Length: 114
Image (cartoon, rainbow, N blue to C red; front, side, top):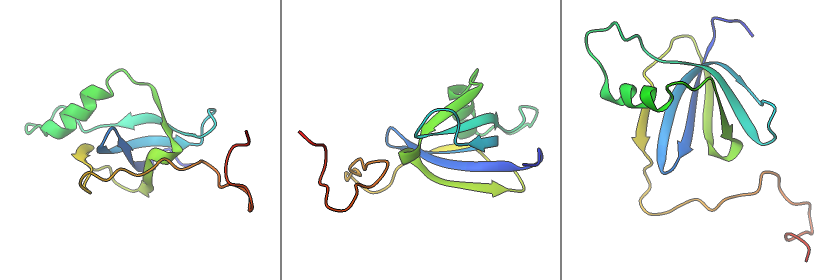
C-alpha cells in the first residue's frame, strides 16, 4: 500500500453518520473490527474554520488508532484527495436496523442451541 493513499471511511455511531479520512485501514488484530490508523484532518492554518470538522477533530483528539465494528461500517473508499471530515444525523426516521450476526448461520440452523 503506497503511503500517499488516503481512505475515506463512512460509519454509523450512536445514530450519527461519521465520515473520516485515514492513511491506513486494515482488518486489524481484533476479530470483527476494522482498524483505522493515522486519522487525517484539515489544516488549522486556514482562516475559515468548519465547525463540523472541528467537532469531529476534538472527538478524536489524542486517538492514535481506532477500531470500528464491522457492522457499523457503511463504506470504505480509497481516494486521491482528502475531503472534509464530518458528522451528520442518520436519516430514516425512527426505524433502527436490527443487529445482524457477523456470519450467516449454516443452512438448516435457526440460532444458538439450548
